Length: 384
Image (cartoon, rainbow, N blue to C red; front, side):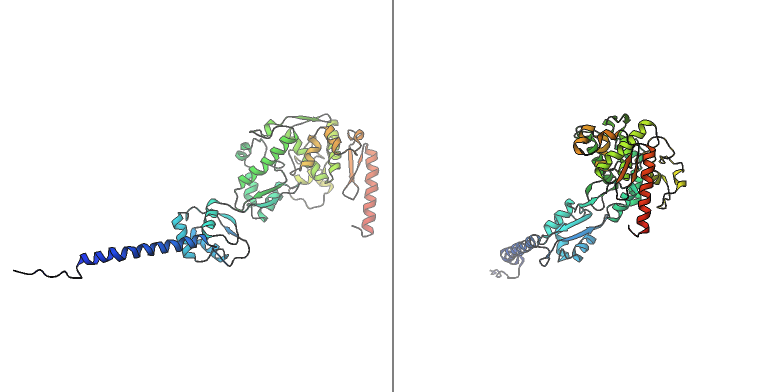
């Protein structure tokens, strides 16, 4: 009779038993430890030594590895490989958005990735000054890094976009309201234009006493009559832009508007220097007599009535000087000579940023000579 051999310790069954007994718990502990460490990495500050906020710029079409490099070089994260692994686990490597991001001290890798995934970008306040032209606005936006000047100007004259905005004009000169706008770097030029024109639409609706909610547009604005002159919304903005370029004094805006309305009512040419300058392709900075005779759609020394369109973006006060009813303007400017407003036909600079208003040509010519003499005497004395 043969005796069975004893079990050999190296047989597969024994090793499997030991693996199940010791290996699996060890593996579980290892995985648990790794997960604990990784949870800790995701939820502790990404850059413990960061003391101040950091603003980073992620250009459009930047891939994840370039984004990680930008963050690391700015000191917003450490351990780039860990950051990559976290992004992959979260599934966001292809969903990070371009823009400027403000990263605060103490932010965790998880919060940073969520912020960039959601596109929670910095909005920068950009102020459009009153009286700026489209060309000046385009340059300002380009200088601030908010738009390409050439593309902004091209889109501001694109008929498809203009029609979308409810307008029938050659370009958007005068239809951008001068205000402070919160913009994001890399914002599409069309969206910038929609925002700025939308503000103009809202302001006009308010001044015309129309509800601003709903889909009301420029077509809803009525023709108004001021000092015996009927004005469409386009003509209101055109006249307001001339007023804006003629004076910066609130009370004088009402007086200048009255002069031009009186001239329009009487069939006189406006003879406004700013309109001539706007129509000159290469203005030297010194308006000459030949310029006043140059025939352009904006030369109000040559053409009757208003020019083709606005010559700048008028501010609220310039628009109010034309749109608000007389009783509202009287409340705002009670010290004006209201009895004389419908008689003024001329004005001339008093060399101190204010103007002298006249009812007759003779009175105007006397004022011109008086203030011209003062200017010449001041120049001779070396005064500014």
